[in-house]
Length: 293
Image (cartoon, rainbow, N blue to C red):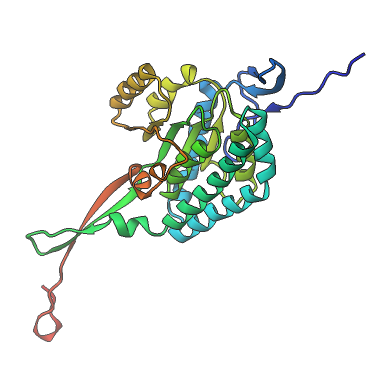
C-alpha cells in the first residue's frame, strides 16, 4: 500500500505560545496540482479575543522599553530570519512563487526589518516639536504609541508584506494582533517561530490564520483595540471596518502598496500609529538672591 504522508498542521501564535485554535477547525492548503500540502488553523473570534488580551498585557512593558533596545530587538529578528533564509525561500516556492521571486522576497523582508531597526531611536526627533506659546511655559509635543493594533495583513505578499506592516507597528512601541494571508499563510507561521526564538517579548506580536470574511468585523469592533489596519482590497470590508472603528474612535488605516518599493517603507508609517502628547511646563524665573517666581 502507498504510504500516506503526515501533513503538518500549522498552529497560531498568541502570547509567545503556539496553541491550536480553540474552535478545533482547520483548512487545507493545496498546490497547483490540487494536492494538499499542509493544514492551517481556522481562527475564531475567541482566538482573536485571547490575542488581544495577550497584546494588552505586553503593551506596558514594550512601550516603556528604551527606543535603542527596541532597535536591537528588531535587528535581532532580522538576524534570525537571515539564518533561516533557505527555509523561507522553500516555503514561498511551495506556495507558488518562483525561486527568483522567493529569494528576493526573503532578502527584502530582512532588509525591511533592518531599516525599521534603524528608525526606532530616531523617529521621535523627527516628529517631536517645541511649540511657541504666548504664556510663560515650555510646550512640547511628542509621539507616543497608541496601544494594541489589529492588522489584516496583505493577501498576496505573505512575507514581505507581512513584515512591512508589523515592523512599523512594533518599532513605535505598539503591540499587535495580525491576521496572516488566507491562501499563503505558511511563511507567517514560520515567522512566528522566528519571533518566539528572538528577544521579542511574548504578546508583542500575535499571529492568527483564518479568513478575513469571518474576522474583519471583530478586528475593528473590539473595544480594547486602539487602531485597526487593513491591507487588502475588499471595499465592503473597508467600509465595515471604518464604521466599526467609529464606535469607539479607533484610528483606521488602509495600507495598499507595492511592498517591494521604497514607497512601502518610511518613518511616516511609524508615525501613523502614534498619538501626539503635548506637555506644558511653567518657566521658572530666578530673581535677585535666587528667589523663584
